[in-house]
Length: 157
Image 1: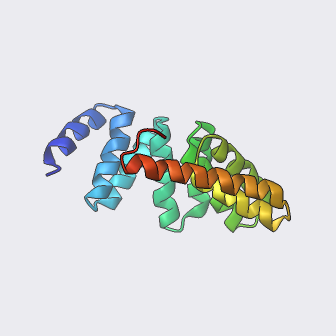
Image 2: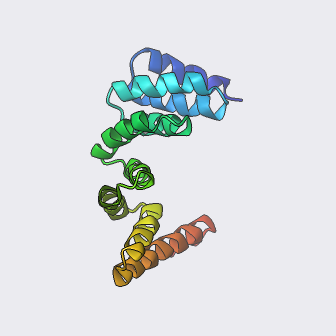
């Protein structure tokens, strides 16, 4: 089922195309070939491909290599990758660096990342900033509602 796309991506990745490297990593992950996928994510990341940086960060975080994951999330976040901004906020929050986590949640939320909106609301509520927290919870709920409408075929939203 994946043989054709894998071959095409592998040829492009072998030829040095960073986007193909990242896409090949995704395809290999779906096939359960995680070690090989990580190698391709790393090559894509080293070539400056933002999605490769993000995906490498995800793989490293799943392995418990949070310090290295943070480095790659930072690089991807600096490249305006919203999910990387969110994941960076999560890692920082888990380490008790709430002020910096808040900054990254704000950036990710500003880029439309719904989970960041929610987590920012939680963080603000814990700080007693309930009015601002409510604002972010409402934004997250509106975005989730729109996403649900779109998934159910309602193009009006």
